[in-house]
Image 1 (cartoon, rainbow, N blue to C red):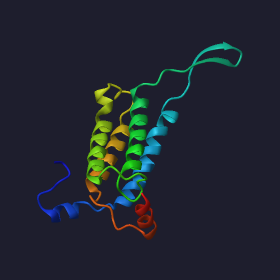
Image 2 (image 1 turned 120 degrees about the vertical axis):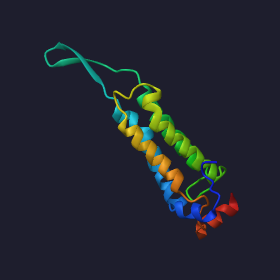
Image 3 (image 1 turned 90 degrees about the horizontal axis):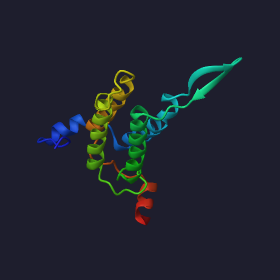
Length: 157
């Protein structure tokens, strides 16, 4: 599997991002990606109608807006359900979460070419994809020790 290594020492040296930091990255990326259609697509001005007036036309959303939104919302939902410090419901194992992050990162990076919008934009998709892949590959597989508050909350969950 992509996230497992034969030698335990190699895996521990490679994975230096604590799961708490990974959670912060998850929620930040989820928010950024899910809000990106708001600033990636504007209103296109068409023809001049009268003096200083323009007829405006909103174009339908394309894959370059839908993909980051879907990945961002999916990432945020996954984070809420992951068994780590910042997860709310704690049902998804961290290994599964990291594997899903790696797949989403690869998908984000390749999506401009898969869906044919690479001539319009590709750099933000590759950058977000590489960051997702990096976070998945370099995050520790197990959450750190719980704080006192988290321990108390876990007892009631």
